[in-house]
Length: 344
Ligand code: A3P
Image (cartoon, rainbow, N blue to C red; front, side, top):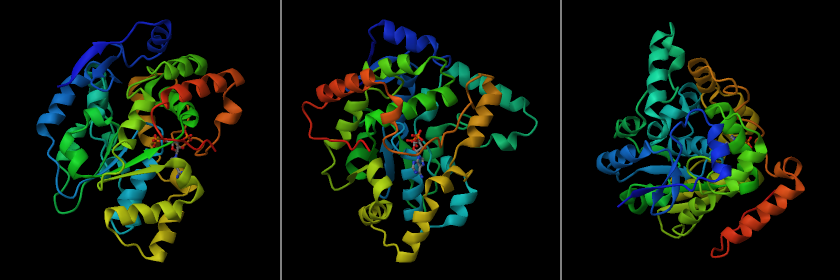
């Protein structure tokens, strides 16, 4: 049974919310698990619990945001679809691998504004793929039954449909928190219109209230603790950076697909950062530009989703003080787990 509770109104939280124009009702904590979400999510949670039914061959890409989800989605979809680059390049990844709960975290007021603005847009065709015009749970429910569904979620284990956690294949991708916080800040600026500086955002991240899906550590640890189930695999962004071909092979093996050496080579090339950055089926550029137009918020669109694509950027971006505070936070949150991250 899921319940919600108020977050402690700290200065850090107040500061965060004062710069988050799309979340006028703030956040609450979902228990058990403590996941931070906007209050409107509660209704969607119940919809998911009631309407979602796992299929025998379902495949999930799960992660804490900014951990390489999009990269992993593109890898997994191609592995599942015989490296069909023609479709991969022509059909938006958001349609091929829908993000189940996204509609539920968007405040209804905003959904209405966006939909009404979209109706007035002369050319609505370039708005396709702009969330939340389509209901995301419906997109998942309506995926064809002839082939396995590949779906994306950022839900922590406590909020996932439980039958998916036991019956479906789950690929969880994790990335070190120091690079995640930088990438998350960029995301909040360009997709959520966050107007605050990085320092305040960083403080909120360390206080476990830096945006929906927080806390970072319990999210990662929740999946880490079930990684030994036959239906779960836990992979790292940093390993994808170091040796993508090995990760492709490992994931293909996990989902029971055999790729030829030449398919691996082609997929490896397709998944390179520069290729993904220039591929409009995956780079979210149209979605960001659409949102900027529809919301009129200044920082939305002022940057790229495919931003740096590197590991270890935190070394030059975080201050010495932030690094030592982060290390202390990591030590504390990792006291009772053997989950370790790679920082470069
Ligand atoms: P940066 O913001 O550090 O550049 P998610 O998809 O979970 O939101 O993660 C987004 C992060 O993954 C961004 O990180 C993005 O640049 C990075 N990314 C996406 N595709 C990538 C690729 N092919 N290679 C390396 N990084 C990639």
